[in-house]
Length: 195
Image 1: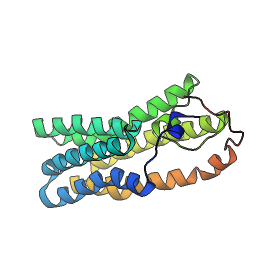
Image 2 (image 1 turned 120 degrees about the vertical axis):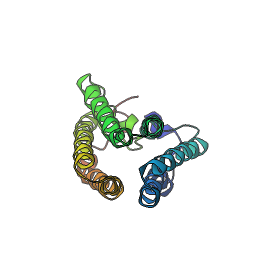
Image 3 (image 1 turned 30 degrees about the vertical axis):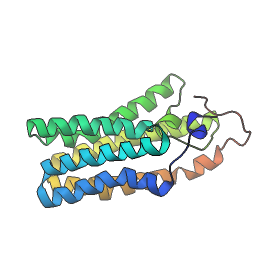
């Protein structure tokens, strides 16, 4: 059994609110006041989201923790140096980190996806390998998309893409993995990747 399966889990609606809330606030603040105030709002919202996760779970899952740290560092640089480049590159850096960690772990025989996604379901080893490979490639595709959008579009379009493009694409990709998950579900009560 994975640590995630033994640990308390967030209600899915609350989990989605904690993930989307800071991004939604960022989008609204950017539309009203511009990228620099929006960056400060994103940092505050992210810190609050991490604190609420800690209060509810007694821990912060890996993915929000890494993303939150990147928001605080890159957002801090954005505000300190008054350069929006840093906050725009944050998704590229985070997505590349996740992609490299997943594919790198896979290369060493350790599918890290259950840890990264705080997964509560159990799969066979083959299922974890396949799902990890797909998610690793997906994170690199998100990084490439972020680079393309922020380099070719306005800041407002990029902010909208983060909320109305990346999130629906990620949800659609996750749902598209359902057949693989069902096919490789570990029904034995044992097996699967041990962490």
